[in-house]
Amino acid sequence: MTVTVLVPDDDGVTALTEVAGVHPVRYTAGEPLPAEAADAEVLIPGFPWSSQTPALLAELPRLKLIQLLSAGAEDWVGELPPGVLLATCRGAHGGSTAEWVMAVLLSMFRDLGAFAHAQNERDWTPRSTDTLQGKRVLIVGAGDLGRQLRRKLEPFDTWVTMVGLSARDGVHGVDELPGLLTDSEVVVLMVPLTSRTQGMVDAAFLAAMPDGALLVNASRGQVVDTEALLGALTSGRLRAALDVTDPEPLPPEHPLWKAPGLLLTPHVAGSVRGARRRSYVVAVAEIERYVQGELPQNLVHGEY
Image 1 (cartoon, helix red, strand yellow):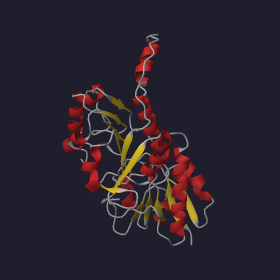
Image 2: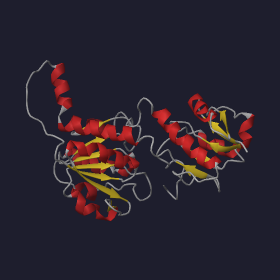
Image 3: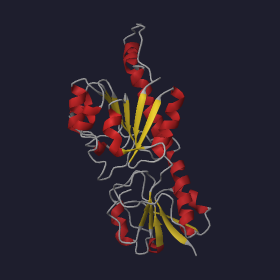
Image 4: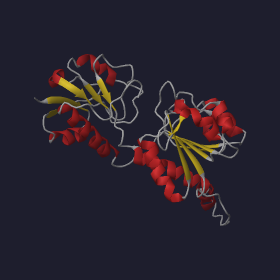
């Protein structure tokens, strides 16, 4: 038996061509589907996600599995026809996202932005900065991203605490957050966007963080109450590094652009060379499992 897989780019076709039992078919979002799409059991949506992709579902009567190239699944949860499975690309982007977190932490603690400004002004004024060494870091999200970050943080002599939606060995439960926040100099958000995490970081969450602490959001913008964060930044009590915002993209007139103590990037933590190749390594392995009659390892259950 051969499984037809709809693929959004030539890289995907190449990656799947050698997989036994798979027939990759190239499609382009927004254009008519090829005739072979009528037999497609697997759909790989484009990366980045296209707003036109959900319209494809009505044209795929044999669809059984949607294999994402992203780790986030919030755009698809609750939108699938009955009986269609959804699998994420967990494992492909954790390293690059953790690397972004390391970059912003080192930049902010070592004040590289100010030194770059001094370079432009030809101002040679040596001074001391803060350091990442010895910092107490709380990682909220104990999946692939959180584990990758912990592995990168520990060689910097940081004290890392992990929090997951439920407690397990080496991981605190989310119900323990209020007590953990008060002693954390850095709080990094690496959770999926679900009904439980939307607005998780509200005024009470931020108030529990100690003065001078740093909030880093590498998850989704809606996890943080933007107005509450703006208040904490404007007062000078907290600092933040955001790769994601709510709203997104951030309008030019939004006050976050000029908020003090904020380092902001436009949702690029996972946007690195080789990201597509790493995504297809995971996607191909998941599709191979499906073809062999197994369930994908990154199958979404409920909201995640």
